[in-house]
Image 1: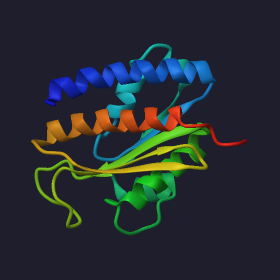
Image 2: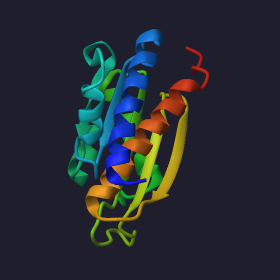
Image 3: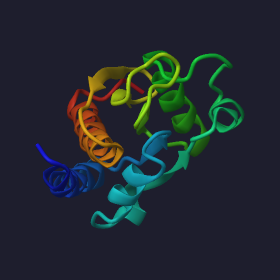
Length: 165
């Protein structure tokens, strides 16, 4: 899939998420590192976003991950960090569901991880779905693929049985 396809399909996923969130009466949040707000922008453009989209945090710097989202100091391009970011944004914004992404957009490696390595975590406060991807292409292609797969992960989490309250 190319960048344009990812962007088009991401908008369709955001509309599907909006419908599901409205039907279930839930709020969704995002914590983003490498995507730097692209997921929030996509969700915010979906129908009736003010009704279901709680907002997000662009945690591009390690300081924001630690201070704002409660991620312990250490490597931040890990599945563990994505889960901690997801849990942190749920606690911070009081959302029922969230998705978080961290990774290497490129063009070079970071923390000994190759360009295109992305960790995604979605779920609620009780459960998480974790995904690791190695996306090919230039940084813009990696970001478009990350947004698409993050929204897919969020949709998958919402389609699972809700956690008992």
